[in-house]
Length: 321
Length: 309
Image 1 (cartoon, each protein chain N blue to C red):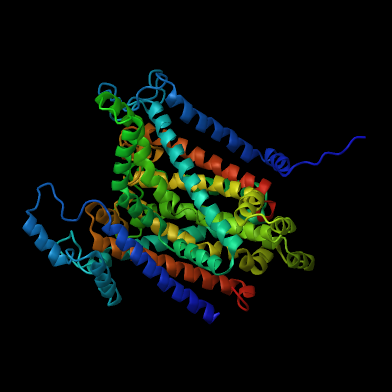
Image 2 (cartoon, one colour):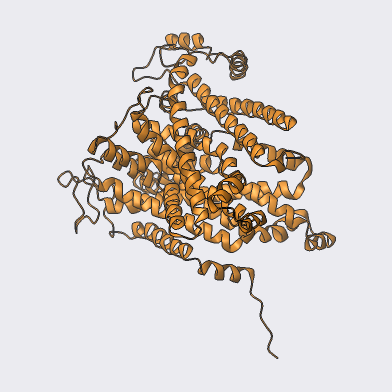
């Protein structure tokens, strides 16, 4: 006898998503941009050194030697866009991870425990919502700067194993420093971007917690932690994924705005925000400097937004706008 | 309703207090200080300067003293600008930023609401796809890309408008910065209006009106606009907050002497009294905008008037 196989929630969602042309285009563009920005700079010798000046070849238009031309110091724009993309994407992903983690834990706790704790936690969210966001991020990212230089020191010492070899310490520093100097940015932006996620998770958890299977789990004597994280949260995964996708572009935009103001990522690291700033300053002499990083940033943001909208229609049909 | 507003107002006061506390300790914990210069100041002179501004006292005392001063309405003296009172600095800069914000917000609403309505009325038509594509670009093209491009094309090449600067009495100088600042918000308002209008247009009373033979534009404006605007109006509070933050970036692109410039300058020079005052002012604006957005929402949606929420 042949039995009819039911389709899972995820298969349904994928079916709905694959019919959404803008979302699939967005997904394709994103995969391309993410993979090239993450892989190309890691292949030794494939891209030119993004910080190598060439004073005889300043402000060149795109050519075979420099695919997107060179900037006012003769640095290769093609490789600068990819290296900058790696930082921008890393900031976007890590910060979103920080934000979503805080948001899920906060919202799930408030929604599951309820009562006065719920009131208190949501009041705090409301208060944070009313703060001038960019301004606080700017203050926060500067205030925690001294801690990161300490962090850099500790991490370098950790990975070089306390070795007294100067060269080895310097080698470790070259790859540790870009990461640790970005930590204030991760924390500052992440610590203030979790609000929407926490509200959504709370509402979802409240709904799921009323269902019978949760009652069943409780009657089996499972611990609250286990009920919450193993039984309730997996059922709220759809909206979490949707809002994670929509948090990434807003976080990347914030990083770019901070870097544009000279407060975010600092040289010698570069990000799309910094490249756009340099491009805007040199727009008259060399418009390519502004155009290429802007295209990179904007197409990433548009792709993420299309994908997020598509995911919302696919995973969270009730809230679809 | 009155009770609700009162509780929102009280909550606003709590937010201001929290904001004051957070800002105070963040600013005081910043590395470096306001009196650092390339040439080291002799220790006894530095001590004297710090004593003059009350910076030698313990942190708790400074906090309480500043709080008391703020309650009396006196934010103190700037630490960098030769002891000018903070109220004077902000009194000069704030009207500029406020004007910029109001013009940008007006542009956002005047562009966003009609385009959203048209898109909803012609759902899936060419106008809809066109204006929503435009809105998507508006959401994703950051102001710091649009700003320089506009300044370059319409300012320096075509010379239609001044490429930078600000003059309160000549509207020509407002155009480029206000468009740059308002465009992202316009895009968002347009998307929200479209969603709200489509929702309202699918209601039963619209079918009844159509059956009675009410012309399409009248259904749109007389019957649906009020209900369809609810999501967009709820967004006005957050939108204004966005415009307030955005003006920091815009003012640095167009060299506008407003709050944003002073804020960035105060961060660079660690001028804590100007910093705290401007953050509080930003906070107060955001709270007021949210309050306004709530009141307008209640006015538009009678269901909110009675009962809870």
